[in-house]
Structures are given as C-alpha cells and as structure tokens.
Length: 500
Image (cartoon, rainbow, N blue to C red; front, side, top):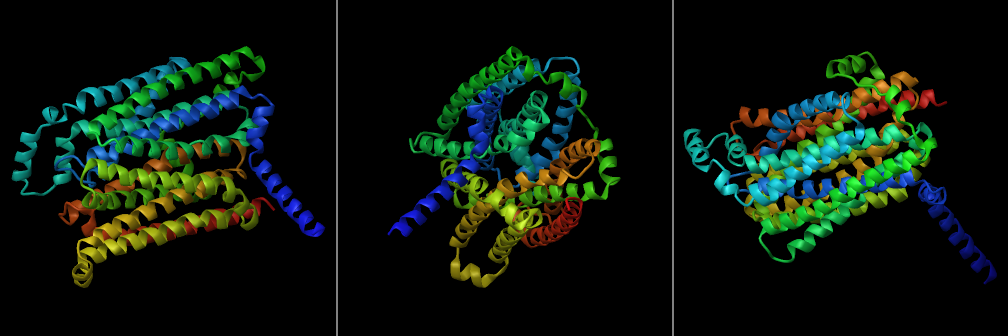
C-alpha cells in the first residue's frame, strides 16, 4: 500500500509540476507585478472579444438577407477588402508620421465604434428603405438570372458596409494598432517570453462570444434586437479598451525603466508591396515561408464560402443560421484553447517543428477534400440524390462544421504558434525585414487569390453557386496542399541544419 500511495503522490507531483510549467509565464507576470504585460494581455482579450462579436454576426447578416448568398463573400474579400486594406495601411502609415501613437489609437477605436453604432441603430433598422431593391430587381431581370452575387452586393450595400467594418477591425485594430503598441513598449526578451500568451489570449473570446450570442438568441426576439444588444456590449468593451490603453501608458510613463518607445521607433521597418515582393523573391528560404503563409490563407478561404452556402440551404433564417455558426465557433474555441495549452508545446518538443506544422496541411487537405467530394456527389451522383434526398445537404453542412472546427484548431494551435520559429535562424536584419515582407504579402495574397479564383470560376462556368464547381475546388485544394507540404520540407531541412 505504501508503494502505491508513493507512486500516486509522485504522479500527482509530476502532474502539478507540468501544470506549473505550463502557466509559468502567467505566474511570473503576477509575481513580478508586470503591470505592462498584464495590461497588454487584457487589451488583447478585449480587442479580440470585439472582433469575435463582429465576425460572429457579419456573415449571418449578409448571407441570410433577401436575394443574397454565400457567393458574395469571395467578391467582397477579393474586390473590396483587399484593395481597401492596402489603402488603409498606407493612410495609417501617413498618419503615423504626423500624430502620436496614442492619438491614432483613440481616434481609430472611436471611429470604428461610431460606424458600428451607425449601422446597428440607424442603417440596419432601415435597411429595406435604404436598399436599391427596385434597381436590383431590374438588373436581375436584365441579366436573365445571371451574376446574382454581384447584384446582391449592390442590393445589400448596408450589410456589405458592416462586413467591411468587421474585417477591417481584425486587420487594422488587432494586427496593426495592437502589435505596433506592444512592439513599442516591450523589449525583445519580453517578446520572447510573453508573446505566446498574448497570442493565446485570442482563443478565449471565441468561446465567450459564441455563448453570449446563443444566450441572446434563446430570447426568441427579432435578430435586429439581438444585434443591437451585442452593439451595447461593444460600447462597454470599447470603453474598457480605451481605459486599459490609457492605464498601460500611464503605468509605463511612471516607470522610466519601461520606456522603450525611442528604441522601437528607431528599429521600425516599413516595406512597400514592391519592396516586399523583391525581398521575398531574393531569398529562397523566405519564398517558401511566404508560400506556407499564402497556402494557409488560401486553403481556409477556399472552403469558407462553399460551406456557408450549405448552412444557408439548411438554416435559411437568420436566427437558425447564427445559432449553428455560434455552436461551431464555441467548440472551435474550446478545442483550440485546450490544444494550445496542453498539446502544442509538448508535441513540438517530442516530434520536432516539421512534424508539428505538417499537421496543418494534412488536416486541411483531408477535411477539405472530403467536404468538396461530398458537395460534388450531392450535385452529380443521382444515386445519392435519390437515396438520401434533401437531407444530404444537412449532412454536408454538419460535416463542414466539423471541418471548420478541425481547421481552426490546427491553425491556431500549430500553424500560428510555430511559424514564428522559422524566423529564428535568420540574420537580425533579414529576420525583421523578412518577417515584415511575409506578413504584408502572405495572408493578403492568400485571401485575395482564393477569392479571385472563386470569382473567376463562377464567371467562367456561368453559375451562381460555388457548389456547382466543387470538383474544381477539390483539385485546387489538393494542389495547394502539396505545394504547402513541399515548402514545409524545405524550411524544415534548413531549420534543422542551422540549429545543429
């Protein structure tokens, strides 16, 4: 009995030590009284929470609108958001040269908040009156029922505006404002020590937002009232964001040892799109890194619109569509957070960087290709249509939900948290410029490229539904996954060689 008890105590001790090691950075923040890092952690959580709320309802509002469809998403992302994001970054860079960082932060948050309130309490309640339905109906008749996705964007410009606001919050506020602020007040050592926690702070809001939306939906009120309730939460969150930002700045100014602004500004590097292209092309290593980032964004966006078209087929009402989407988001957040905390680090240490990051293209290829094959079978195999009937679309929508959960988990837990390791062996100057170039081009080219290919295929095959081109999308996903896998092999080989 003594041996058994001792063994049990040792097992508990080992488990406790692993838990302490896992949360050591958080414990160190508390013990060291690092108000700055704690403030950044809270700020990232609040900003991500707003984004999750916006992202959680933007698709529902647009896709479930009258005479709209999921096919509008690639058009908005490729033809509107991509060029607009470039203009916004250039405009922000110009303003950054003339105004203080705090002025830009406060004004940007307030601008987005005003746009959100304008939509939720003025434009959305009067969306029917403000929509050019008569002209859109005439265009539908004139086009003989073709190009309906383009007409839907014109018809529902109000919902498109909100979609753009939600996307730009993620790109401008989360990616530019927040990380510029974090990089300007943190040292390199602090970045290595705490940035992993700051990145993980974006997983928890996904869970909270999904639960919040589902609680509001259970009240069985019109979807407009649900959206307005969420807008009130956003107001509170924005106030907390502004206060937290002010508090962190005040804390830094009180402690001269925490002032890193001058150091960060002197090392700040801005590259134009042309310079980014040139920098990546001149380095084969960076080219493969960029290919990995592009492939990830391309693959995820390639499957998104087709899956959401099936959700609308099965759940045409806004409340039902939102409830299903929120359930998927909730479980995505649960599994992503658990995987990030308890599996990612141990897996990398045991199996290595290459095998860890290869999980992502393999998982996406398996889940995505099976989804597209199911979609192709639904529309092209008479036997399945006759035997399963209309319920086949429901099975595809649910499988798409499982696919979305798996893809989000592997992307958040393995890709986002391991891609940064690939920059370590680079020389300091190349490391900074190379990462900047890949960040500028990678995600944007992946999203925009995927969107424009889908738009081109819709026009080429003269169809209004992405479901009708599922077989082509299947082949595209398979090709991009193979290229992605080969790029990982190249990077892994050089990474392993440089660290020996």
